[in-house]
Amino acid sequence: MMSLSAVASLLAEAPSSKPRAEAQAMLEAGESVLEHWLTAKGVQPTDGTREGFRFLALHHQGAKGDPSFNACRESCRELVYHYNLIAAAPDDPVAVAQVKMMRFILNHLYLFVTGKMEVEGLGEFCCSSRPLRAQSV
Image (cartoon, rainbow, N blue to C red):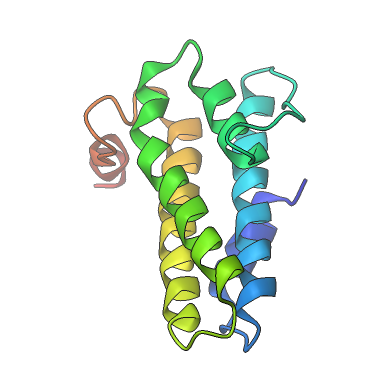
């Protein structure tokens, strides 16, 4: 499991010229983010898969008993979608833009999960970070 600071570092790195490898790294970093959520909740992260992806199984596991965690379900599905596009055509010139989109989605997931770890109710209304903004004022 990659540390959350390592995920943040990955997000800050300059894009590489290897879309497939970068897409794999983004997906693995997403798994790590979800593993941290589960571990913080005292749950052993699954090794199972859902629709062929451990990442989706981790999200499903993380949402059990916490309906507000479903706010990031579509972000998880989008990350997998862009991963699949890159895996299917890694040499396509559009793959670089898809990796960039994966980076944005992973950042969104990272901010959501780390915010939720700070503020329990975060995500009850969409994925608004209002509770965090209110605290920082």
